[in-house]
Image (cartoon, rainbow, N blue to C red; front, side, top):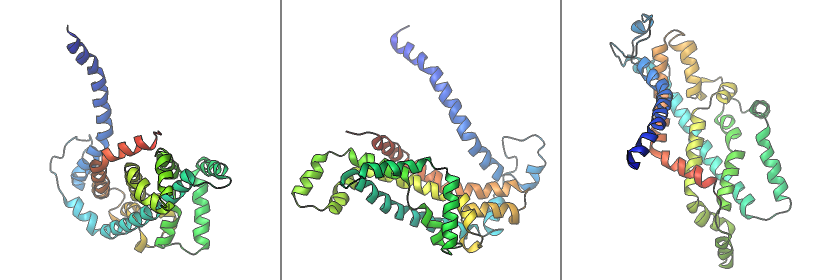
Length: 280
């Protein structure tokens, strides 16, 4: 047996494990789509679940937009996602630049204390944010939905590490040419660190689109419902608790934009994560 054949055979177990893992990950998506194509009657008469749809129908997708205002919820989610992501990018970029390039008394202590915020349980933060938003009378407003999500300690840390990986010589040369810090940030750092910026943007979009606890807590007016509220309304007031195929159709519609987004930018995400954790 030659070396090439031996190398191929040695990789077979690895590929088998990877294929099995891929099947485990993809099966819930397959089951979701399969269930959405089954009629209410056929789904409830299956005493043993079938791995195929004997009489596929798209009526569930029609019902997803007619039984509840899913289109309105999608539009609200789009507004929430775009504004929140844009504001967060401004906040974390300025904060990361300050910690990475500017010098001021107590910078290291401040950043250490800033990182310590990651140790606080998310439940405590939600309680504090809820009390603050309620006090400011911002419940059932887009401002109340958006404001608690316009910053992230993790994203600031990730972007700061990426900024610090850019050689100091570029910063010193720009200062010697009389370039302001803001111009250096916009013209040098952001273009160099574009993969990380794209990664953060995509991850934030996914986070906003999948947001569930905070929208459910801070809104009870259907005019401000997001898709997460819509799924719950479908379950409670729309199709009924037993119409699982119609609910799955709504979930497919909601999940499709994120799946397409990830497939388009998957390489950028990997590049951004890799560059964000590499210095020098």
